[in-house]
Image 1: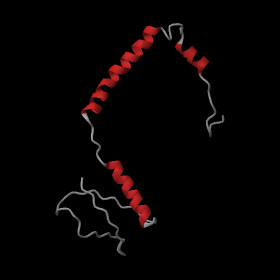
Image 2: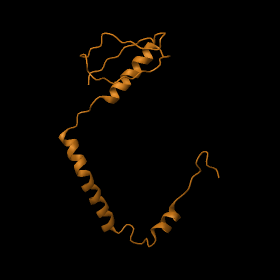
Image 3: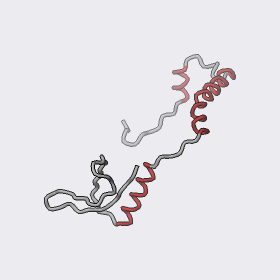
Image 4: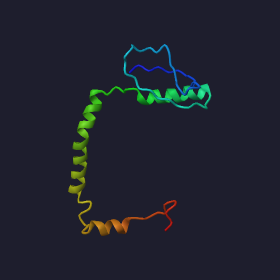
Length: 111
């Protein structure tokens, strides 16, 4: 996705004119208008951050295989826990959880 960055000043009429864009006439583009009270260096840093966030990342075949294998690995781990009998002595799961749980105060919710 080609990206073009510039600065412009809103005209007295409230309109914004941007000239010499590097896109062919009739090309559909997305427009994001942000007010600027930051320095040029701050704007450049923000632009770099935004561009890094939208850059496509390469996904390898290994990444895809890992994601495909994740549910199988989870099933295997849960099966191992079940076979180990880790929670075999727990009759009432809700009661067991209430006994173990330690509530902590949450800011703004002192009631």
